[in-house]
Every structure is written in C-alpha cells, then in structure tokens.
Image 1 (tube, protein in one colour):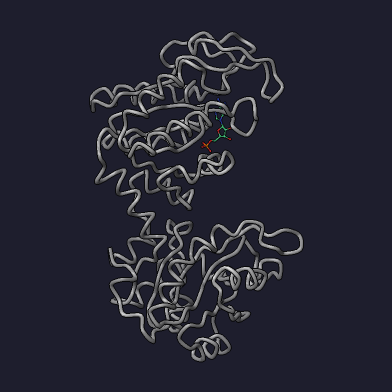
Image 2 (spheres, rainbow, N blue to C red):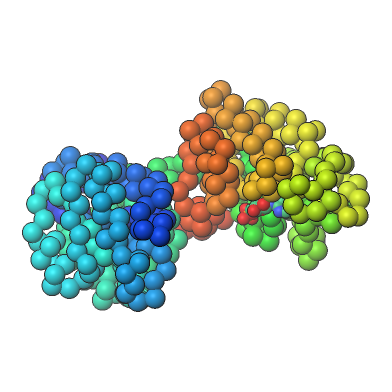
Length: 396
Ligand code: AMP
C-alpha cells in the first residue's frame, strides 16, 4: 500500500481528495467537524514535509451551483483546525484556479469550490478529472466516504498520476483496520451483524462466513431467521421472502464451521414506540400483538461470552431499535462487551452506518480499536468488493 511516507513531498503541490461533506446549520456553521479533524493528519504530514496542499471535496447534493452548498462556509473552521489560514477559490477548474494553485507556496493550503457544482464530477468525466489533475504534482486520496464511487476526483483522476498517487493517512487506516479483521485476523474472529433487514446485509453475511468463527445476528434481522426455523415472532419485523435465504445461511455456516448466535430472548413491545408496554419473552414465542425490539437478558449473557472470548471483533448494525431509549439497552450492553474485550487486547472495528451512530451516541467510540468513517464504503468492503477509489491508487 503506497502512502505518504513513500513519496518525496518537499516542494510538491499535493492534490488531496478529502471528505469535507460536513453538516451545516441554518447560519452555515459546521455542526460536526469530525471529517475535517479526520483529514488533519494527512494535511499536517504534507505541510511538515515541505509541501503545499490543494483540497478537493464535495458538500451535499447540489443541483448545479448553489450558494448554500459552497465550501466557502467551512473555510473558517478548516483554518482553525489546521492552524493555517486556508485560501479559498470559488471554482474547482479554470484560469482562476490554475493561478491560485500556481501561486501556492510550501506550507500553504488552498480549498477548491464544491466539486459537485460540476455534473462532470459524479459522471466520472475524464476531461474534468484531467483539468483537476493539472493543479498538483501528487494525488492523495483520503476520502473513504466516497471511495466506493468512481467519480472524477475519487478515481478517474488517479490515471493522470501513474507514479505519484498515494493513500492518505485516514484512508490507509481504514484499509488496514479492515485487513486486520478480514485478512490478517487473530482468532477467534467474531462478527456482530444487526440492523433491520437481512436483504441489506446478505452479501456481507455471505462474504464474512469465510472469515469468521462466530457470527452474532441481532436486530430486526433476527426474526426472519426465527420464523424460518418455525418460531412464533408475533408482529416483529420480518422479510418473508428471505426465509429460505436465512435457512441457506444457517446451513452454509454449519458447513463452514461458523457458529451462529441468535438472540434466545427479546424485549417485546405492544407497539413500535418508546413508551409501549414491554415484557421479556422467548424469541420463539412472541405473542401476536407484540414485537421484538431489543435483545433480552439471556441473549446478552450469551453474546457477552462470545465477545469476551474473541480476539477480533467486527460490529455492524444495532441489536435493537436504539433510537428509542427503552430499546437501546442491548446495543449499549453489546458496545460495553466489545469495549471490555478491546481493553483485554482484542481488535475491534465498528463500521457501516447505524452502529457508528450508536457508538458515538453512547460515548463508546474511544473504547473501540477503530470506528470507520465511511458507511456505504465500509459495507461494500465487507461485501468483498474492490472499491474503485482504492483500486485506482493501487493501479488496478
Ligand atoms: P440498518 O440500517 O440495516 O443497519 O438498520 C438499522 C436500523 O435497524 C435502526 O434504525 C434500528 O432501529 C433498526 N432495528 C434494529 N432492531 C430492530 C427491531 N428489532 N425491529 C425493528 N427495527 C430494528
């Protein structure tokens, strides 16, 4: 994996694709600067090594040029975080931009306007990518959140830097963390898959059955498996057309010697709301009018044993409807088991959408070995796909 340490950056202009797609409030203040902070190590390293930096990003989903999606709104915050006065140019290609890039001196940072003001960006247009490429000497991709997209600035541009293209620190860390789980993992390896639907996780399940010793299945997915095996699930969420698939997964897991752990009991509610009446019931005997919204105490005891016996843990998807306080307990407990295992020396990776939101919400983020920054990109990597943004740097 070619990274910043493998190239000479002294006096070079580094063109970096970052993910500065940050949330803004009505007054255009950045309300969560995690993504800017996440790119800091890459930018710092280039500046320290005597280079200058040209930052490229998208923001939101603009339809053409829309002021509310201008990256000018984040200049102040980015300057604060980097400790450097960031220059801004209100376009991403053209004479003005060429001049601003040419004027850039070592130690300086230039931010280009939102790439998605040009439809050529998402279309992966070669001409647009070539124009962007002319601005820098070196191309660095540090945007994991868009690495699964073959856009001009994430993928196509790399063709114009046959030698001088590298992974930024953040993207390298994402790839390394996933490799630690899927390729060079220390056994036993456990994956926890939760969330709402089997259908959205099926490719992930199929891919990871070859890599794990234990698979904990939780969340809404549980009930398709339970019903398929003859259990009574009451009004719980279920994909009836995926029951056969669920049985196939169970069979495949057996063949591959993967132990599957499903909840044995659940917190059942008499409505999909936080203040519904609740009771703990056997997962196979949920009465009509009741639905399972969280893992029950016996299930959590079982999961705890598996997690604490694991050396590598991957977590994707909540164990219950964690957005409602009364059904968040299973997800919080699981997070705490993973935190304890991590403290005992296991490697833990949390990735893909809602579980990342959950660990952040419950203050568990610092207790995990790594929390991924890219939802869709992480899911595609777990599915075993080669991401175009990563392949482009590797020259494949
Ligand atoms: P996903 O995006 O597939 O990871 O699913 C995450 C969503 O699954 C969250 O919004 C949870 O509220 C939801 N979820 C988890 N457990 C259940 C359940 N038992 N019943 C319904 N929804 C659930």
